[in-house]
Length: 418
Image (cartoon, rainbow, N blue to C red; front, side, top):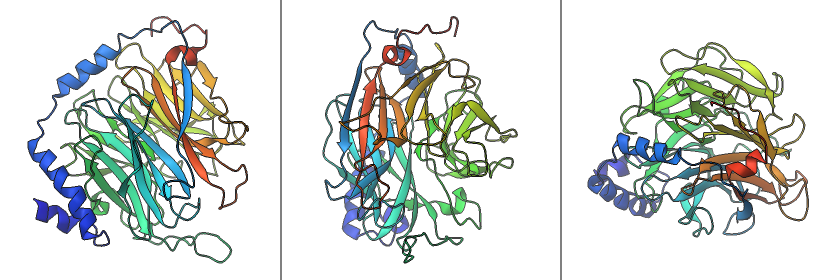
């Protein structure tokens, strides 16, 4: 098995890196017993008994600081909670030389064992070498505990025009890879190229997520792992052994970066970033892996400045709360707002602005990622610009926010019977 994994790993990864990351993961795979799906549902149902407490709670701390730990900037967060111990893992891009989207970019992470109070030192997940590994999108198999991180890979030449513009991608330039962890993020396997089964032939530019995918809990396909992607969903029905694409035949040009949530009836809801040719509202559609997503529309309750957003189901099945976080503006990325939907993502009647971070306003905002913490609060990673200018030399950081439902509701009355 070790020989097989090493052979499939990238040739540009140093052998020492492949061996170090692979051996412990393989041992964990062979020794770890699956966690029953029924147990995963039991844990979720127990959490649903949680009621709104009397005291609102909110805190924020910078956990990735641009210019520290060997990276100029940190962007594109992905936040997950592990199954076995409920650890938090904050994953993002570590941009080596500047804050640009292409260049020498790695996937890195930090772990928290105490619900986000403290964080362990920075770990590298993928990307040694002068390459771009970006758009981290993470999904956790709730029945086995295994964590999968999807990423897009390309060489570092797509930012090298003299005027600073990006070179156009050609088919085959931007490929899809995945790595995994079976020990709650302590070690990671070497990334494996899954482009042939997860990306349409002839694709040039591509987007995976970023953020998080889902583990389906309802319907005949319960247990399926799903990663949202440009014009498609990537899924596995065998706990990540193989991955397949389900192409969205309608509306594939309506959005780029994507999020996904499961409705209580098993349907899937996409909530995506609008392209520049569309009204600046989140683009939404309901569908399934087999039946497609036939009707896309602008959700005029959710203005968006053409940026990434983050969606998370807080409760399953009842009370029915879905959380959504983005910049609630059509002109700026610095108007971050958390909202609650009680009708499966159609309306968001309750919400609250995320406070500014630090001494200067206008620096917090951009890409984000949500997760429910083991102590039944909400964790949110949000980008932070150390310099309000857009220069490529300005450092970018990521702030971890933690708050509870009473803080979001802020004295409002939640709907009855949701």
